[in-house]
Length: 399
Image (cartoon, rainbow, N blue to C red; front, side):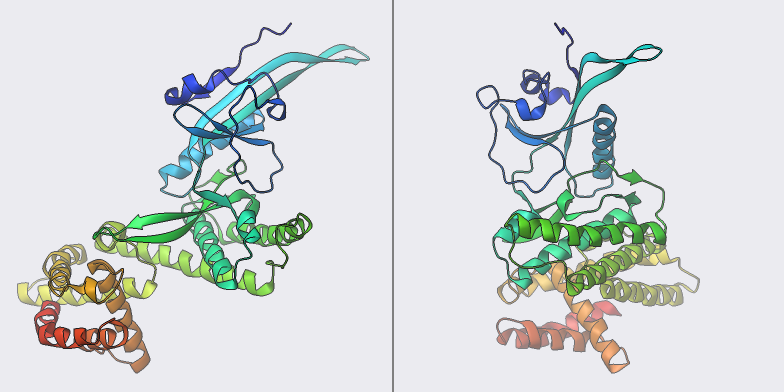
């Protein structure tokens, strides 16, 4: 009789509800009359995975080895600390059975027989990509998934995370509600790394390693394409040359944006996420940097000495950027630009200014940019007249 007890390496918060589970059995032998299973949509997996409902939380449990369970749990924690989208680890459990005897010419040898289970909190609002393909999505919907996947891969690589097993089968996608500063709700789609078994976290990833990860991901698209068709998950191919080009284009764009943001933050001392919320267009960073450079020149001329870029950046934030946001608020922009915040409107106008200036080969100025933007995008054209009457007050803040 085996009197061994499971060894728990899990968060104390969940110990009481996880301890009674039948850890002495392989996961596929757990029975519904002993465990409260959840009928959760899952994708294709080479491991046995079960979804369990506890008293206070729900869990995803995967059977593996002790070494891989510890490694994956540690990787999840490290990835979360980097601020990236991944599963939330609860820990892992190891159960040692009596060793297996093997007779050899020189005597009896013993091999360890153990089961290990890695536990993560169940992402109730997340879905495997394979389930989404059952919905017979149109191309525009599929591209939303590709865009989310591209951003995830770029973010991982930028932060030194080499996946090693980058695959659609190891990704979840989640639709979630986001409330802006006025309490309005919009839906966003994000991709989540759902398997960190092979992850390596390095100080930096070379272009060769990034290419290896991407090449493996594109190969996995081809394999999964056939698997999904054979399983009746999708009727059409998604692993096309155009699909891969779309992912690579968006990957390169987001990776370049992240590098630009890091350079901007290092030079100016301004945190992009804190001060500008979500920035997805590299042209905005370029435009803001140019404004800060001009503000630095203005401050230096007025002071009769060289003002540092970081000093100029914080002064610009306080005396230019924030006052402009206040003016936008006074214009009651929410009536004319649905789902726009003050920050979002500023980002869009400055991006618009950059685009028009590039097109005309000269700086068109903020006044023209605001007029052109409102004429093109305001939901109510009467808003253009309101902007015109207030535009001088706004543009003075730029000089």
